[in-house]
Amino acid sequence: MSHSTTADPLEELKQTNTGIENKKLAMWAFLASDCMFFGTLISTHLIYRRVYADVVDPTQIFDIELTGISSFVLLASSFSMALAVSSAHKGNMLLTRLALSATIFGGLVFLGGQVYEFSHFVHEKGLTLDGNIFGSSFYLLTGTHGTHVAIGVLWLISHLVHTFTPGHGRQNALDIESTGLYWHFVDIVWIVIFTAVYLVEYLHF
Amino acid sequence: MSDSNHLTAGHQVDQHHLAEENEKYFTFNTVAMALAFITMTELIIVYLPIHGTIVFTVLTALSIIKFAAVCWWFMHLKWDKALLTMLFCLGLLLAGGTVIALYFLFQPDPNGAPTL
Image (cartoon, chains in turn cyan, brown):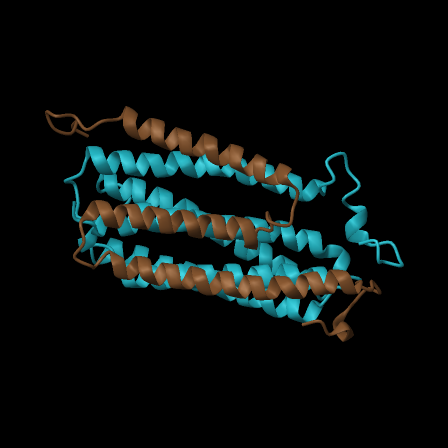
């Protein structure tokens, strides 16, 4: 960034002992700890699934096409989030708003799909939170992930609103980047859940 | 994408930084296409008449590729300092170790599952 003629507010934030912005470092530390949180939830589900293998046949319950589409949407929202961060770094607020809106839309579609899925499972398939061990661990794991997505959507909405306030600009790019890290993390957790909880059930050993 | 008319708050972005960000756009686009293709492959492969062990191995490999791609490009680890990669890998290592340890610690009972 030595080409800059004026002080770059984003470069100034890197003036720390590590050379990394404090907000970014804190977010990565949080995400590293959240890995352990989801790790225990995923292992709980997998252990119960193995120990109580005959409790339920998930392939009779899951709608893998719907979940597949939800996964596509979440991955697409990760792409728009990356664009939002890039646009914010360029100081292009118009594109930042568009990309943030697309990400929020993707998150809402994913949440809508999850609400529909849960509703369908409870009312049509009889899979409840306290009905059997599979229902308990499944709803706990996917519900916790859904809560993360919901928090992410609210966080993104707050950024979108903030972009319309006077004085908002490139100097706020780090805030959007930190939220972007959280959003991508939610996406990578879903990559694991989609494979370990949904797709694996369709295999025949 | 590089239209400076949209720049706000009076902070002029230097050309080097703009070119860097514009280059990222094409990278993100390619990664997004690859991720969509991999997810589609995952959905198709589970219905193919192939032995479960092979499909499981392929699914695991594809998930790892997707996971790594999002971390490396979308989460900017490629362009950020290595300390962040190490920090996240430490969390992943602890989480992965916990999952593997717990999974093999709780074996199914040969006399049947315990009563709930």
